[in-house]
Image 1 (cartoon, rainbow, N blue to C red):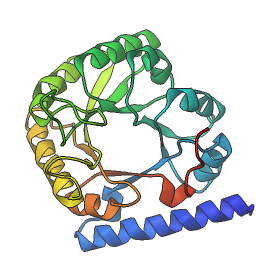
Image 2 (cartoon, one colour):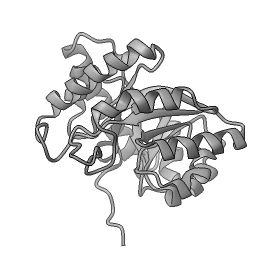
Image 3 (spheres, rainbow, N blue to C red):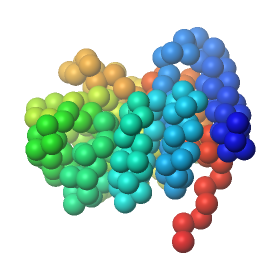
Length: 239
């Protein structure tokens, strides 16, 4: 086993232990929570190792990094998630490889995703990114739609060809009433998910929690956690 494979296997085992312990503490079954490994800034060789170790879900946040990596790993049985803020001029490329876009937060993006999904003959899963720090503009510091905009945007996604409404995603906010209160933030997201599922029962995916706060997300009820650093190590600085 190579040094890197040994390192990733050890890190992955520790993360699995954390998720299992969090599920047990919350009275949940381990299989209720899906691990998504965020592989941004790391090479395709790491993705290949992770796949060999049993990882099935990987995430990227920059199309210029993700597109060539996904192409290089196209032979692997992976589900690719796009989790970064997405500009409409990158949508055609992203639709080419992403199975799920977790950062849907505005009507213009929905229209672009639908158009390109239909053109490519693909169905793309969509999570609405919820901004729990949304100000007067209705958007958060790191993108996202305000909670009161979810219903309208969800209806748009659900009615758009080539798209599938899968659920909600959030990033624990750095400002506002939920800053430093991850458990409360994720609890609020679960309440919003409950509301969404009344109109869209199949949209039951809730993506929340990262390396530092996955336990709080699991306790709140998240179905997917997005973990990068705890599996891959401290990210190299981008030059």
